[in-house]
Every structure is written in C-alpha cells, then in structure tokens.
Amino acid sequence: MVISCINCCFCLPDMGWLQNFLLFSALSLINSSSAAGEGCKEYGLQFERSFSVVGEAAMLNCTLVAPEVFDFWNVSYNIHWYSEETLELGQATERTLVRGTTLWFLNASLQDTGKYLCVVRTPTQCFSLTTSLIVNQTNSHCDHPYKFPLTLTNLVNDKLVCPMKDQLNEIGDFYSIQWYKAMPEGCELIENKKKYTYIRGGQDLMLAGVRPEDRGFYTCTVTFDLGGVRRSMSATIDCGVKEEYVLLPRIVEPVNEVVKAELGSSFSKVCYVFVPCVGKHSVDVYWLDKVADEYFDNNANNRVYHQTQPDQRQVDGEKGVWLNHLLTFSEVKQEDFYVNYSCEVYSYRGSVEAQFTLLPADPNLMLPVGLLLGCLALNFTAAVVFYYLFKIHIVLCFRGVFPFLYKSPDADGKLYDAYVAYPRLLPGDRANKEVEGFALHTMPQVLEGKCGYKLFIPGRDNLPGEAVVDLVEERIRASRRLLLLYSASAFSSSDVSAVSEAWQHWYERETAMHHALLEGSLRVVLLELEELHPAQLAVLPPSLRQLRKKQGVVRVRKNHTARRTTRRPGGWSLASGEEARQEGVQGLVTPPLCPSSRFWKELRYHMPVRGKRMPCSERKTLGNV
Ligand SMILES: *[C@@H]1O[C@H](CO)[C@@H](O)[C@H](O)[C@H]1NC(C)=O
Ligand SMILES: *[C@@H]1O[C@H](CO)[C@@H](O)[C@H](O)[C@H]1NC(C)=O
Ligand SMILES: *[C@@H]1O[C@H](CO)[C@@H](O)[C@H](O)[C@H]1NC(C)=O
Ligand SMILES: *[C@@H]1O[C@H](CO)[C@@H](O)[C@H](O)[C@H]1NC(C)=O
Ligand SMILES: *[C@@H]1O[C@H](CO)[C@@H](O)[C@H](O)[C@H]1NC(C)=O
Ligand SMILES: *[C@@H]1O[C@H](CO)[C@@H](O)[C@H](O)[C@H]1NC(C)=O
Ligand SMILES: *[C@@H]1O[C@H](CO)[C@@H](O)[C@H](O)[C@H]1NC(C)=O
Image (cartoon, rainbow, N blue to C red; front, top):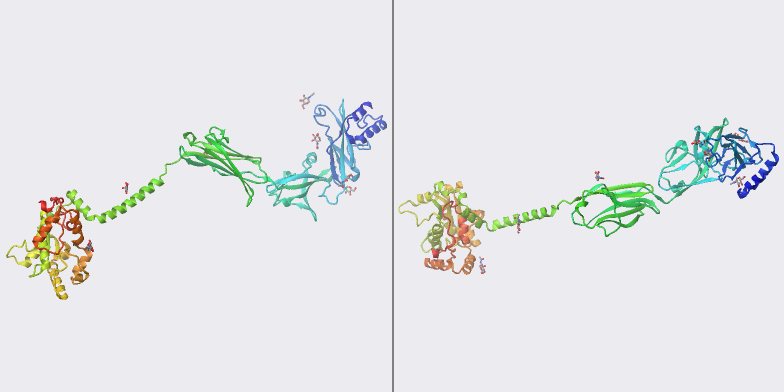
C-alpha cells in the first residue's frame, strides 16, 4: 500500500481517479492476486489517446511490452486489461477482444469512452499503464471530430498517408481501404483513377499535381473481419496545401559541352539554374574541377574562382528563381584545358549536375580568309582595270621581254609587215600632202628605222613599169597588215556628195578588191591623222564607218603632242618639229617620232608581233640616231 502510494506521488496530475481506482481495487479485491495494478510499477497515463466514433472498431495498445520496460523477449509475461470500474476485460466478450498487446472495441459506443488500465506481469515484476479512448457520435463517417493534420506541397505529386498504421499492422493482410473526401453534399468516394492513385494497398493516396483546391478533409476507412464480423475503422485527415514549394532544379547551362577559350585570355562560364519554386528555396550551387575533385571558392584573388550573381525571380509562366553562378578564369592557362568543370546543384529534392570541358580555341580563320578574299577580289578588279588602261603597254612590254613566246611571223611567207594605203596626192591637194608626207617619211622613219618593220608604201616602193592594179593586189597579199592612213580633209571640196564619192572610191579601191580582206586573213588598221567632226564622219563610206566603230582607230591626239612637248623638252619635239616644217606639213599635228609615244605604241600594238626580231630601241629619239 505504502509503495503504491509513493508511486502515486509520481503520477501525472490528472491521475486522481487512478489513485482512487487503485485504492478501491486494493480494498475491494484484497483476496485477488490479480487485482488490477496492485504492487505494480506505474507508468501513468499514456499521452496518446485513441479516438473512435460510434459503430466503428477501436484499438488500444499496451505499450509496456517494449524493451525499455522489460526484456520481453526472454521473460514470460501476461497482459490484463481493466476498465475504469476495475472490471477485467476478458479475452473475448461481445464488445471487446484482447489480442496480444491490443484491446479491441468491436462496436464502439459512447459508453466506451474512458480510461483503461493495462497491467503486464512477469514472474518477478508488474507494470501498469493507463490509456484513454474517446468515442464520439458523428453524422458523417468521413468527418471525425478528431483529425490528423497533414500538409501537401502545391504543384507536385504528393500523398496522403492513412493515419492507422498500428491498427493496420495488427489487422493482418485481409482488409480493404477506401478513401473519401468530405464535400458539402457529403462523403465522396475517391476512386483510384485520374488524379488519385491508391498505393500500398490503399494505405497511401497519391495526388497528382496538387492544387490549392485539394485542401479539405480526407478519410480513410479500413474494412476488415474481426471476431467473425465485418468491421470498419476510419480516420480523418485535415489536409492543407502549402503554397510554398521547391522542385528539383534544372541546369540550363552548361549542357555537358565543349567550350573553347584562348590561352592567356580571361574566360567565364555561367552555370544557369532554374529552381521551380514559390517562396524560399535553399538550393546550393558549386563549381568543381572533376579531375582534381576540388571545389572553387568565391575568392576573386584566385586565378579561377566561383562568382555568384544575384538571383532573378521569374513570375511569368513557371514560377521560380534563376541562379547565375560564374566560373571565372582571370587568365586561361594550359593546365585548364581538357578538364571537366562540373556545376553541381543541391536541393532537398535531389541534386543535379552538368559539366563542360575547356579546350584551346582554334585559330580564328574567318577574318584572315575574309581579308584575303577581299584583297584578291580587289586586286583582281584592280588588275582588270589596270589591264584595260595599260593594255597596249603591257602587251608591248610582254612582246619585248618574252619574244621567244611568239612564233616568228616570217614563216607565213609574206614579204611585208604592212601595206600603207593613203589617198594619193592630187594636184593642189594640201591636206593629202601632209598625209603623204607622213606616209612617206615619218612612218618609215619610226616603223622601219626604229622598230624593224618592213613596209610597202606605194609611191616609194613600186618599181617603175609594173601595172599599178596588179602591183597593189600582189603587194597587199604579201603584207600582214593593211594600214589605211587618212586625215579628215582627205578629200576636200565644197560639194559634199563629191567628197563622199571620192571617199567611197578611194576606200573601195584600197580594200574591196582584196579577197584577203574578206577572208579575214588580213587585218586593217585605220590611222587617222586628225580628229573627225561628225560632219566629216558623215561623208565616210558606210563600210568604213562600220569598221571604225567595230575596231576603233589609231589617232593622233592633238593635246597629247602639246603635253609631250612640254614634258620632254629635250626629246623629239625639236627635231621632228624641224622636220615637219621642212616637209611643209603645217597645221597638221604630227605624232612624236619616239616609238614609245602613245601613238606609235598603239600602232605597234596593232602591228604583227616581231617575234625574235630586234626590238624597237624605244629610248632613243630620232634626233640621236
Ligand atoms: C504496441 O506497442 C508496442 C510497444 O510500443 C509496439 O511495439 C507494438 O507495435 C504496438 N502494437 C500495435 C498493434 O500498435
Ligand atoms: C535475451 O534475448 C536476446 C535475444 O533476443 C539475447 O541476445 C539476450 O542475451 C537474452 N538475454 C538474456 C538475459 O537471456
Ligand atoms: C453495433 O451496434 C449497433 C447497436 O448497438 C448495431 O446496430 C450495429 O449493427 C452494430 N455494428 C456491428 C458492426 O456489429
Ligand atoms: C467527444 O466526446 C468526448 C467525451 O464524450 C467529449 O468530451 C467531446 O466534447 C466530444 N467531442 C466532440 C467534438 O463532440
Ligand atoms: C568529361 O566530359 C566528357 C563530356 O562532357 C565526358 O565524355 C567525359 O567522360 C568526362 N570525363 C570525366 C573524367 O568526367
Ligand atoms: C593585293 O594588293 C595589296 C595592295 O593593294 C597587296 O598588299 C597585297 O599583297 C595584294 N594581294 C595579293 C594576293 O596579291
Ligand atoms: C586640247 O587642249 C585644249 C586646252 O589645252 C582644250 O581647250 C581642247 O579642248 C583640247 N582638245 C581636245 C581635242 O582635247
């Protein structure tokens, strides 16, 4: 008695009833050794209470059978349950059932509410513990007065766990579970489809894509057989949905790629991470060298360091936070190449990683190649322009430098390089006198004297007695070029038609009879000693006009002479000027006698290639010869 009283001093405050109960039992059941709790070690009132509703089964567990209490594995023991009225609840009554450490109420009623004492006896010891059961009346079986709180995470797949783990363990394998959700109109059975999945035999209910509207009361109801009767038990969860959530982060960059950097340059690579979340996240990002297995720290004094940029919250579309973490190389060194740098991201939902490998940059070919192509295009254009501007000079120069490239024209069996045709002198014809002077004197001086061409000039070369017409044809056939030499006023008369007729006559006489011309084996070169006005052009024979248009003419440029004279005062001008005056050639501009002047170059360009013959001595002037 004393002991039990002392024991009572350690009881919980609301254990007054138990003291009475023990006192009562001790007094009333003196003769019974099995009196409830007598001489037993008290464990007071179990904190966890059991809840049930009318009509359902309820279970109490005697938690004294635990290693902390006694060595129940090796020591034999028995368990007795007592109601508040000290009545021992037998192994099986109509209303209760004792199974192992548990006491079952098969069909709970409001009267079952109360405290129950479990007494565990071993051969040497005794322990007792009080457990309370609360049975309430409900209108709806899915709205228990006592609810288990539980919070799901918004937007993820989350699950509800039926809070009857102990009971289910005790029931065994033969049971079924249904889940209900309390709706305004009553209990709604949740079917195992679409959004909801029953897992672990229904012990858990998985919700796909939790939304805030999933808040509410969920009840799991277990149906099983006990004591030969179908029973049920249920528990209600008060389910909340947490708006704040964090999902598994995603690394957007790097993507296990190869990145090139130039040796000696500075270089940065970002680890760009998206954390789908609402509210706070606790995601950590690290950069590490996979080869050396070293993390980079934030110390900017290091050559390679981890630089953290401010996070950016994304509010449009998928909500979350963008994390920017740079791996910065202030100077890339050889040892940095071929190393895998890994960005590792840790969150409580899991970790992800992505890496990149640094390789030396290829030399940048785009710029030099572009420049080269541009240069080539420019140089090509320049070359083309240059060629057109200086075609004659280039061709003549080429002929002079590489004479062996040209086959000698002597092989064609012709006697002359050119036949010089010009309007023959008529009495009192002043203009043609100038032309004749040019043909008979100036031209041979340069072409024959300096350039080694062989000319046939009628009026100089024809032998007396030869029939003129035959001679002309024969000589032309023996020539490689036909030089038609004329001036604008070749046929001067006040009568335009007479002039035209004279032209026509002359031109036809000089050309039309030569089949060679028609055959194309003889080239005609037009030499104009004077610029022709449009009026003068009009009287030319059409075929001559056409030829002029087609191949152009070699012409003495008036101003050219003037320029040349001023530029090279010690050159030809004096000598040729003297000569021109001696010849009585007045008013007509005479080309310079130097073979390197433009007129002669142009003419030489049209003349046959001299091949291996002596080149013109261009530098010397006639005066010096
Ligand atoms: C009863 O309680 C004991 C001790 O805490 C425990 O080991 C056992 O699993 C419980 N039994 C049930 C059915 O909950
Ligand atoms: C009790 O049983 C356990 C095994 O469950 C054993 O390891 C231990 O030695 C036993 N203790 C005693 C006192 O027999
Ligand atoms: C529980 O008891 C009530 C009345 O006492 C009865 O109507 C009901 O059928 C019983 N339920 C079970 C499962 O025995
Ligand atoms: C449940 O029953 C207990 C005891 O009968 C009572 O004290 C409590 O107020 C009831 N709870 C509800 C929510 O009805
Ligand atoms: C480095 O990365 C490449 C591709 O990103 C991978 O193939 C290789 O296995 C990685 N090496 C190491 C040591 O992780
Ligand atoms: C093109 O011309 C430029 C000068 O204008 C010269 O420097 C360059 O070498 C030329 N390129 C080639 C490919 O000839
Ligand atoms: C020749 O030059 C003079 C001025 O020096 C100029 O007036 C004249 O038009 C030029 N003639 C030709 C055909 O270019």
